[in-house]
Length: 145
Image (cartoon, rainbow, N blue to C red):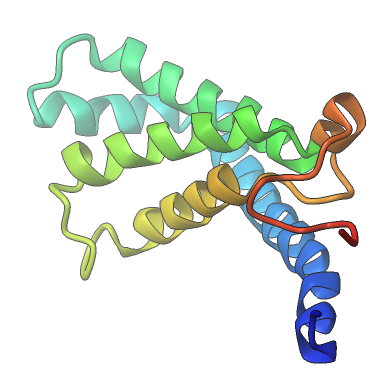
């Protein structure tokens, strides 16, 4: 038998996931939108060029377009968007910021962790994943057994 406190936490877990999705989606949409629509991608390409990355222009545009579309998918509640965001941010943290998660890569690492948490938990009940697949996540008991 489940305790009352356990049911309380489960009921509010969907709200917590929705808030995390909304925060991550809007922040990353703003961030990548700024790069894409305010002509900041060449700055990112110069940074990648200074790190001796091959094809810095292609990689800069690819990363920002991926972040933009992943943010939209996260806002819609599609788990694949969280995977796209997590992979993109993992590359940024490990390679562009040399894995310095306690200094210059702190913010991208936090966004990576939030994306990875959404990968693991799913996008919660109010999501398109829930509409299309109509199955609860293995990790989150959304309905009573």
